[in-house]
Amino acid sequence: MRGLAALLTAVIALLTATSADAREPHESDWLAEPPVEPRPDPVAFVVPAGLYYVTDTYVGDVVATAGPTTTYSTTTVHESTGTYARVIDTVDTGASSSFDGLAFNGRGALTDGRALAGTYYENFVLNPNGYVPVSIVFFQDDSETRRREAAASPSAAPSAPPATLPPSAARTAPPVTSVPVVGPVAARSVATGAPTPRPAMPITPPRPTLRAGIALAPDGPTLGSAEVLRGRLIQFWPRAFADGVAVTVRSWRLVSAEPDRISASRGGAEPFAAQWIRMPAPGVRWTLRFEIRTELAPAERLEAQITVTVRSPALVD
Amino acid sequence: MMRDDAGTAAVTTLLMLPLLLIVLVGVLELGVLRAVAYRAGAAADLATIVAVGDQDQAELVRTGTLRLAADAAETARDYFARNLSAAAPALAVSATQIAAAADIATFSGAPSFDPRTGARYDRPTVRLIASVPVRTPGFAVLLMPTVTTLTIRSASSPR
Image (spheres, rainbow over the protein chains, first blue to last red):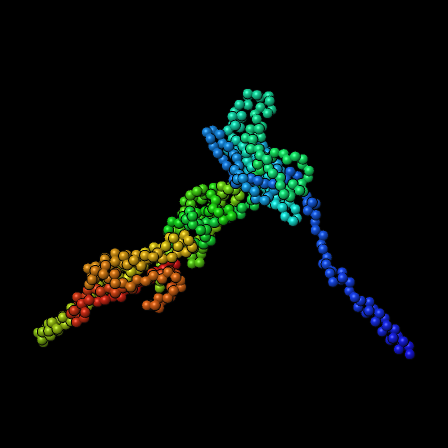
């Protein structure tokens, strides 16, 4: 009897619990929305101070000589690449910067070895996570002759510390243009008041990928290996490319073992000529490794190599 | 008795002398033929080696691999004629004619098989087969042809 009562109690409890779930569903039950993940408020982006929209893009460094004066400048093209930039440092001639070595285009030097004056810019791209720094570019702006003249006449005003013009003053003032602050910057940047004139701050597109290789002709494709005939004079052309586009090779240097005869162990625009006189043992291959520097990025050292198999005409048994 | 021996020796000499001369001529002619064969073989070897050295420069620049020049066969033929001319006095026809009739084939791909010889070449190869007719007048006394044809074969590749 007790067992029957317990069983009955359990059945009633089960039915009660089941009926609670069998109710008519509410409308909201059918239209349940998936949980929405909170999105970051774009306004909460950290906008780097001094950020502006790029309207001029870096093209390359220019070294122009007019008479005794050598001018170091930077060329740009009026183009918006959708990137942002800000000035991170302005350096005078010979002054060091914490950003030295970080710019993709390097920082050149005067003939006396002092680093060029100019401005460092940091480039940003805007993505859902905010402004992401992508590269640093150095805009050189210097002139060498003026310094020589200034250095040659220190007696003109020996007591005046800045008797010679400070490097920044000696530089040619960059053109001043209004850079439109548009888009996200205008909406999210800190209050900057009225738009202030900014110099044209050309910013580079994403840093080009530099690649070097060895070709057997000035415009030939780069090769990983090559067969050469013993005793034949072969010309190897160090080549460099930026994003697949050929760039001028400033200098090259052979850093591996040398063939029997070579034209030079280092050079510039001329090729590396080599000749193998001795016949290597069967299966032996030579690897020529080069260190290459380009006009586009003189400070960047590229490496290239080519494997050479020396063959000789011989009778077939 | 001695007189009889002397007569026998004289008769024997008279009978054997022609035979000895025939053997001598045959040996000399074989020697000459051997020398011409050697020269013709060397001419063919040098011709194929020179032809292998005539590489396709454009292909080398493009791919870095040695490939026979398009005119490698003609180069081999030309050099074969030039080299063979050194043996011209012994030849039944001119060296130019022999070279023109030579079977010269180039095998640019590797490996490749020579349908005529069945040889397998693992490198680009120039192969030359030539028939070299050599004048052998001495063989006439042996009732053999006065022109003997030598077959010369040579093949070269960059190795």
